[in-house]
Amino acid sequence: MDNRQSPGLRARLEHKSAPALMFFHRTPRWVTPVVMVALLLAGFVFRDWRGALALLPVLGFVGWLAFLSWPSLGAMGKLLRVALMTFLALLLLSDLGLMS
Image (tube, rainbow, N blue to C red; front, side, top):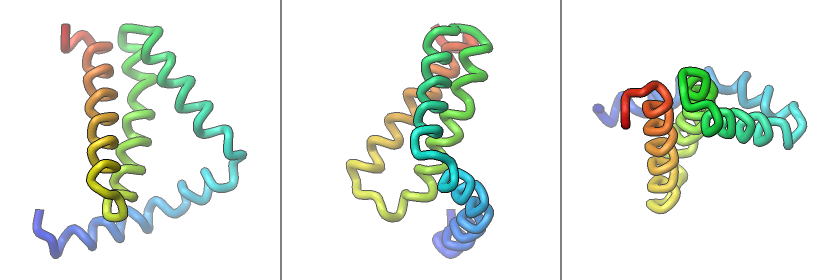
């Protein structure tokens, strides 16, 4: 992607993310992690389309936060986020039966 377009895309996504970030800021601190862990556990327990459906918002949430925080991350932070998203994507594909 052209570097000149990237700041515009980032700025637009940050602007569109502001209401969601404010929503998460207003909820009790424990709600988001509990919901994400519950969805992740459902993805582990249900090894079919229900597990994939539970993992989809977790993958989206992690990807969204990774994109927003990417410029401020060091190499290890970027590597960990890519590894986590890869793991979640593979688990989701496995739940859908697209991987053995």
